[in-house]
Image 1: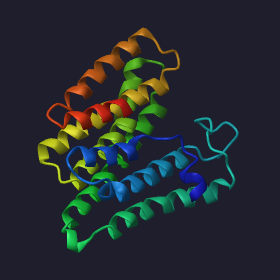
Image 2 (image 1 turned 180 degrees about the vertical axis):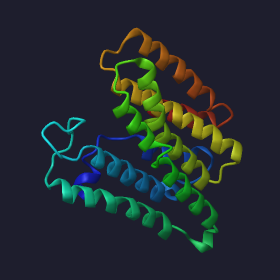
Image 3 (image 1 turned 90 degrees about the horizontal axis):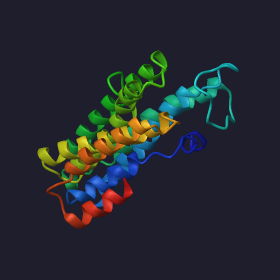
Length: 222
């Protein structure tokens, strides 16, 4: 599990979860279980996508495979409940955070499911293309959903208001979308650069109203 957890390309979603928690006035320790769960969910998704089934498997594997596909499939399956377990044991009655933890569990399970990251993977496979709009859609569903969930979860655990939670969710979607589009478009076309710049402006707008010093820090990171 340790090998597959850290074999996936580095994702900024866990860090965004912690940053969002701090941005709304929470302490980073409140978000660490959720950040860890997000890393496990992301790694499980990536491991399943890159199972070495055949020599011509799609997509090209980016994982150093130490085990057979049967073992890697089982390990990936085990990561998901382990992530939920980390969240469950973080429930502390003395802090009265049960409702927040439960809400975060729902947020994460929705994000990794058929309406989120799985949808993005399906879209990428079914409509494999260099078309920038198709790449944009796949990026919004996969990386966008993951980062939007991460930011929203951080804000929830940090005690943010509903307005702050949704602002952070939108910010996360934009950040993830940008990263996904850049990853998928190897040509770095002019159209891509324009779309990225437009999306970055939308992301920046979502940070208005938060602590300026913290906004400056989070803007540099993402």
